Length: 129
Image (cartoon, rainbow, N blue to C red; front, top):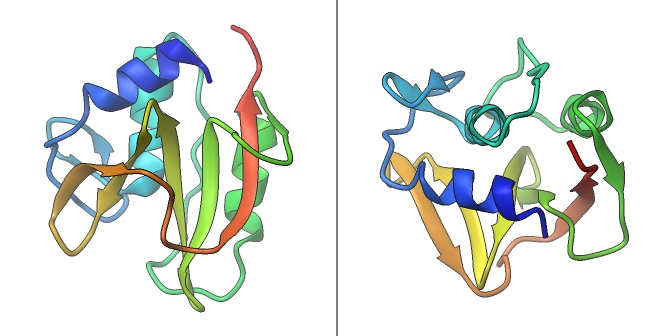
């Protein structure tokens, strides 16, 4: 687990949710949480644009990972792509004992303890900075 990324993600817990949000001051969505955590951890970020909250195709999210220094792993990735439902891909950051993610229903960034309740569609580990 990338400790700097996990620590940065944890520091975002409580930030309000906003679709396409990229700033902790204005709100974050799941992509924004990853982007903000990466920046706080000292990484450069190229975030995807033009996605919708509901979509069948999650290839844009899968491309986000390698463009930002992540490599595919079988399990225990720093970045996890899940299917919250059949038409909703969702990104989470693995932290000790769970995940940090933007929860649209709760309208804020939250900690999800334990394992993800959603099917995992991909996992990536962040290469060292």
